[in-house]
Picture 1 (cartoon, rainbow, N blue to C red):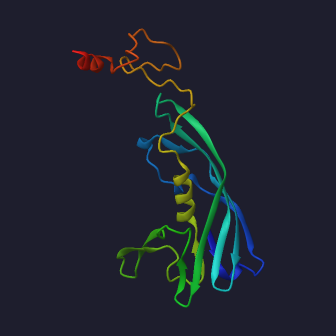
Picture 2: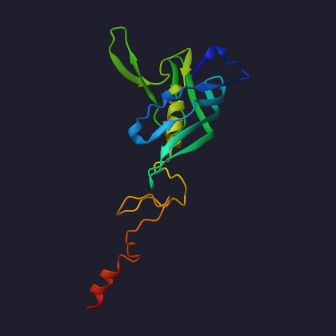
Length: 186
C-alpha cells in the first residue's frame, strides 16, 4: 500500500483496500497460514513536518494448536495500526511507533547491488506501508497459539488427542514431587 504525499490534502485522506496474504511470507513449517487478504482502513494526515497514518487492519489466520496440533482459525479484526514519519529536506524519516527501529527494505541500485535501508528514508514523494502492515499483523500473532483455553492437548505417552477421546495410558502421578519428600524424612 503506497501513500503519495502529494495526494494527502490538509484534511487528510482515507485509504481502504486490501493487501494479498502473500506479503506475510510465513513458511508452512511454522503452522501459520493466512486465509484471507489483509484489509485496511487507514487515514493519513499530513501536518507541517509530519505524516501520520492510523487506522485498523483485519484478516483471518489458520494456526496449528501448540497443545493438540490441530488446525484452527482466528480472526484478527480491527487491529490498531499507527505510524509516523518526519518530513525533512532529505525526505521522509520514520519516527513511529516510539521505541522501535524503523523497518528496512532491500533496494537495488543502478549496478544491481542490493542493500538495505529504512523504509521511506530519503523518499520525498511516497511511503510504502506494505512492510509496516506485514509487521503489525505478525506481531499480533500469539507465540503459543491454542485452539481453546480448555484444550487438553496430547497424551505424553501415546500421543492421542485428549480432546477427542481418553487414552488408556496410566495417568501420571498428580504429585510428582512426592518421591523427593521422602528424602527429607529418612
